[in-house]
Length: 498
Image 1 (cartoon, one colour):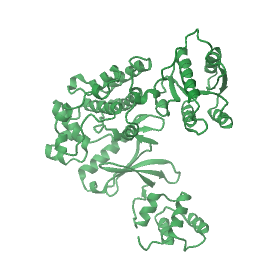
Image 2: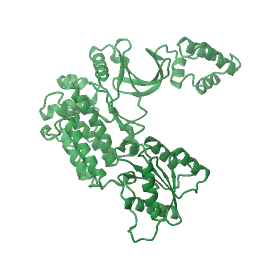
Image 3: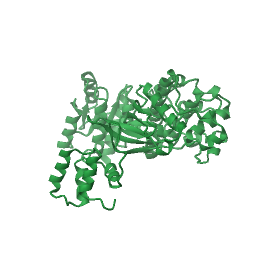
Image 4: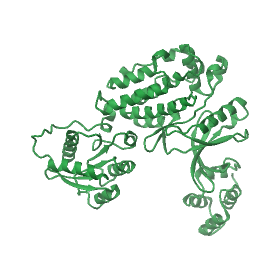
């Protein structure tokens, strides 16, 4: 607003319930004058975290709504979809963070769109699973419909792949397993997803995949004219697949086809179905027949992974997995085979994220490769400390053992030459180990020091949150002695010649 002043802005924030009297007094006290420039007022409000940029912008425009949804104070916009906007919000007065999803205004007068939105909310109220984003509250007032969900710190799968280009097979498979686990749980309750796409999978900061947007109305019962007007592109894809393959609407195997599409996209960096905004083209089954074979885009993909994707995406529904539980069993089996080292040829883009670089031979007859070298081991389990100490000392290394990753980081801060390499294990430390590993790899004074993250069985989700490069790698446990020795030799050799 052109006539907005600092005093008017602060009063408007008070009127909207964004500030209380004591907070207003504190701002005036700091500014020292009610004639303070607008930029000083805004800077003070933002610095003191009394308001967010989103709130300031709305106040400046004279908006009187959108600051609260029920008891939830809106902080800022985090996502926009076809039907709704999602905001990071806090519950008054305890300050807990939630995501509030609000139906866009243009759909509130449509009974069908409003009911679909509320159906999603009602479905979400029933679902409680580690791989499904829970919904806690649904408000059905057509003037202001919203739902309250868990706020997942992380990113969408679409953004993750966009940033990385493509994912290594083991990371992609772990994420797919999470997705299918969520589908299997929902299927037990008679619920299908019907909107499975990259943007509807959230990847948390610890690498766990979670599904959002269950409950999409089945679009297969719409005629072609209505489908052409449907604003949700994936709903059209589901209908096209089911019509083109001769199955009933809401076939449970349709979700599995699009789960396969997620995996295809993760390992190739490209969507299997060509993108088009023409909704009638999306209804054509020819899009499904023109998918580029995996072997052309990912020739180094392990055959067992390729077979899993191809089965999920088979256009003959009878050749797909029968249900999510069936696919989940196969995902877990393939995951175990990959961890065991079977068929582990991987794309160069992510080789360091799954295995140590190729290393010189370190046979039992080799001279002590660790002579004059010190390794700092961070491990909380005493028995594992003993194993690693004995293993490394036998090869000539001086071994320092610490239980606390923060203390280990401080040792390197105090003396970057305290050790030639770091080995840190997730067995007992779990997330703390990954956080310490990432901090070590990115810190200015330790970023050049080689480090190995030992990842325990069942900790694949933790590994996805780790930051790997040529000097900072991962080894999976159970660990072979030769693997650790070879990795250390190669890393230390590269470090010495850098």
